[in-house]
Amino acid sequence: MIKSVLPQIVNQQQQDNSITWRLFVDGGLDFFKGHFPEQAVLPGVTQLDWAVQLGCKAFGYQSKVASLEVLKFQQLLLPDSHVDLTISHNKDKAKLTFQYSEGDKCYSSGRIVIATETEV
Image 1 (tube, rainbow, N blue to C red):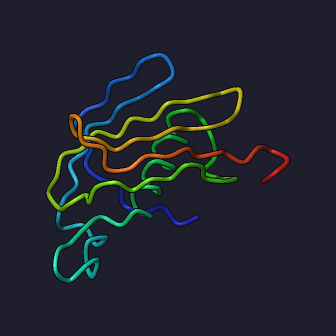
Image 2 (cartoon, rainbow, N blue to C red; image 1 turned 30 degrees about the vertical axis):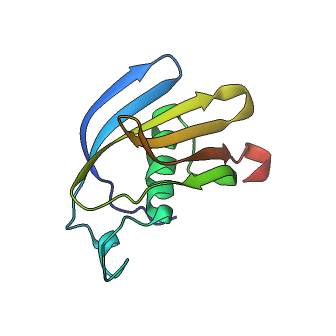
């Protein structure tokens, strides 16, 4: 798997089974180029990739996804934005639940099911 460039991490807070990263999404990132001409937005696939990379590293998984559940992209994530990425870990089910938000505004959310040793 080719690793993409991650956003700037401003700070990180960890609680029992969850971590919240405060991110700065720089408008100069290549992900914004050509997506879309009228108004640049951060592609959903990039948001998902960042959640997989950060979540797997934080909770000790290899970046191998078995499936995705309840993926929702509710708001456009624009260049030069600050956003919180919160990832919760369900160890028993090998699932990561993520949400990109800013205050009460939710940009995207979903669950990432990590491939087990037998599925790799």
